[in-house]
Image (cartoon, rainbow, N blue to C red; front, side, top):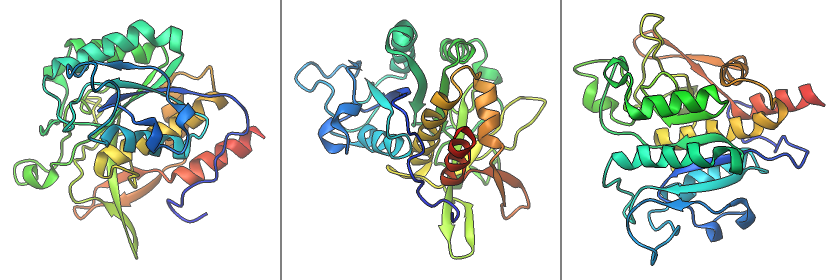
Length: 281
C-alpha cells in the first residue's frame, strides 16, 4: 500500500467505538452513514431553533473523516461553536468536557476529537498545569479515553520568534497532538502552516504525530484522521491504556525531516490499520 493511501476499512465486527466530536455540531444528512450520529448536546448558546445542525460544516467534515477510517464508529456531537464556526467563549470547552465526563460511561465514549486550536505558540504546558481543562483531560486519559487535538495552523506567524511550539489545547501533555503533512511528488513534508514541537523529556510536551489531513484540512483534518485511527484500533485492544494505544500507533511510524534537519514521526493510516487488523485475524 502506498504512503497515505486511504485504507480498506479494517474492522470486520460489529464492535464500535463512540467518539465525542467537540466542534460545530454534526449534520447527519451530509454523512455517508446517517445512523452513525448519536444524540449529543448543544452548548453553543444559539438556542433550540438551530439545535445540533452544523451550519459551519467544520464538525461535519471532521465526522466524515473519522468514519472514513472507522466505518463502525458512533459519533456524539458536542456542539460548542456557533453557526460561523466561532467559539464565543473558551469556557465552553470546559463545559463540554464536563458533559463528556458525566456521560462517558453511559454512552461508552472512548475517543474525543477536539480538532480546533487557538493562535498561541507554546513550548511547554507549564502555564496550564492544574487548570480545569488539564485536569479534565488527565482524568479522562486515566479512565482510558483519548483526547485528540490539532497542533495549530499558525506556524508562519510564529516561526520568526520561535521555530517550535503548539497551540492550546494541543500543548497539554495529556492530549494526542497532531500536526499536518503535505504530499508532493518526492513524498511528504510538514505542512507549511502546521505548528510543531519536538518532544522533550524535560517538559513532557511535543507533537505526538503528523499525518496527511482529511477534511476539513490542515491540522483539524489531521486530528480527525488520527481520531479515526484510534476509533478503529480501540475495539481490537479494548483493555489497552491510552499510553498503550499511542505506543501501538507510533510503532507504525515513519519519519520525515524538516528543512532544519529535525526528524518528526508520521503515520500512514492505511498501513497502520491494515497491519493491526491482520494481526488480529
